[in-house]
Length: 151
Image (cartoon, rainbow, N blue to C red):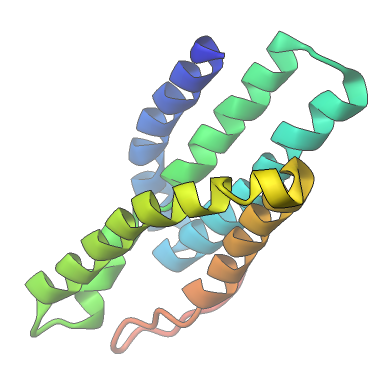
C-alpha cells in the first residue's frame, strides 16, 4: 500500500510541472476542470471499482494510483488563476486559496468518518461527486478580460 501511495505522490510531483505546460497549451481553466475535476473523479471511482471487478492486482492499482496522482496535479494552475481574479488584492486571494487547501484537512477526515455509517462505496461516490462539482465550479473562475471556453 505504501508503494502505491508513494508512487501516486511521485506522479503528482511530475504533474505539477506538466500542468503548467498543459495550461499554456489548452488554458488554465480547462486543465483544472478536465484534468483535475474529471480526472480525479474518474480515477477515484476506478481505485474502488477496478479492483472490485478484477480482484486484487498490484500493477493495475499502481497504474490507477499514478493516474490519480497526475490528475491531482492538474489543480496546480489554481495558484495562477486565483490571484488574477482579484488583481488589486492578490495576497488576499492567495490566502483564500490556502484556506481552501487547509480546509480539506478538516473535511477529509469528516468524509472518511462517513465510511462507518454509509459504507465505502457511497463515500467514494461522494468524493467523486465533489470533484465533479468542482469541475462545474471551475468554469465560474473568470479572469478579467479573458473569455473562458470549453474545448
